[in-house]
Length: 623
Image (cartoon, rainbow, N blue to C red; front, side, top):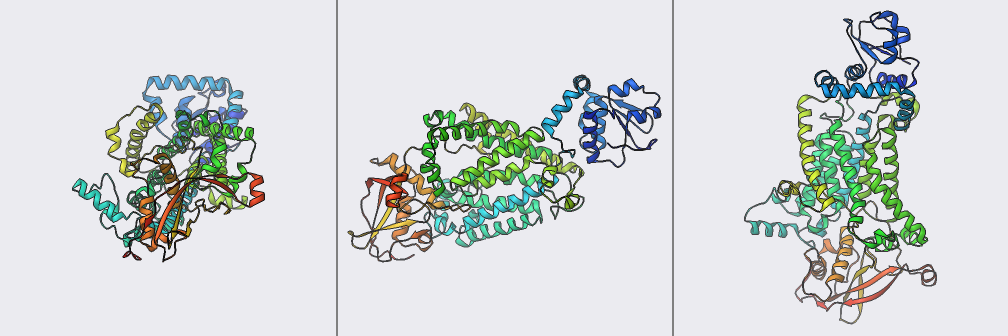
């Protein structure tokens, strides 16, 4: 229990030394700042302040100023928060706003009369840790891990950009941007912000991902964090907006949304853990938690909102493991679980996605529960599926649920003292104003969007449209409806039109006996997009209309023309002499245990459709 010899020239915080609740909270504030403040139980201090009776000391805490004036009750509590540098606005409101003063005084008196219950409740929701909830070490861990996610994203994209949207890719970015510019008769930078408007060459594509990767490494090293975050965000935004259908996935916009808000969470300093660095903005951190809550809640809500019977009757997992875009070998075993277990897992998933977001704004214990539930769910998804850095980005976002005291528990006791951050100075006035503008902007975009997702009634669409291209706020909800079949596109090539050889993708299901592999944390975007193409082909079979998101025609042309960057995306490209091409649409599903034992096949399939034969023109050569 902190106690300072009296008298003192500093403000004196007087509390009940026999009250466990009082001692617990005084210790927490003492851990924030104990220099320049005197601390004393009234049992020792009462004789120093004869103007205050023992009954008054027993009823409420007091803060006695050096000039002899004092505050008691809620006013003293707010003065203590001001003294330790935590916040000043509650004391200002208590002194000037009568309704606020009346309500807070009443709440203080109620708590003081029920200290035993308050102490039990405090221990339940805040835990036994005496350290306060500060987030300077949390910010260091979060930003370095976000740099790692950015690095994975840039390296994964860099290995595929030439084949996807390069000049010899499936859908060249230069052709798409030129078409958009001609149709609109100007460069629509605000609608589609990307540096590729300046130069959409292969060299610029390489510069974007290489520059982004370098910035990510510097961020991981803690150098120029705010600047590196801004570079990472704009480089990845440029790639995403220039990457056509291959970069229109939820993990891309999630990373961009996290990345944008993180720019204002980072310190404006050349080094992440430099001495004298300002404390993280509480308002910006709340925006991060608001993003986490929206992301997780709507991931569950849209499944119920869709009315899909497989979600409503909890049978969705009976289809998920083998219909997900890029299954893994562990998913084959998970698919063998009993029906009751699959339903139980589905129920638990809904409980976590819909319930855990309610805890993220709570005190330490509730946030810790949310962290365990949400991270546990992401790890289970990683264990049975290939979703690139999607789950990693979600886990990194969850790190903001833990405070400095919890992170320090991961370090050896002898080195924890070096990590202690205390409570740094509040951000400068210009920085606080800038953060306020960012918070207002994000709330003005996210609240109407959330309302639209909840009610399906559009709200403030024109305002949101002005910022859509920057991906500042996005809607989430993967697997709104569960696919119950798996249409798989298989491409074949031939030299003579009679003997056909399969064109095998690296991770997409193809040969029945090939074990589904992990590609985590890489995201093979061609393989993933082919899953969508299979669904489009099944839905549009027999119709002349097609989806603009279908890449199969462009892919077949690129393969027939032997565009080298495209062929490098395949595991088994066609022979150079191949002249004829066709594709099949087969229905795949996991084999059962008996079939796999007898044949070694992980999959069983049946043919749905075979396309007409495409002949490569005689003058078509390698591009």
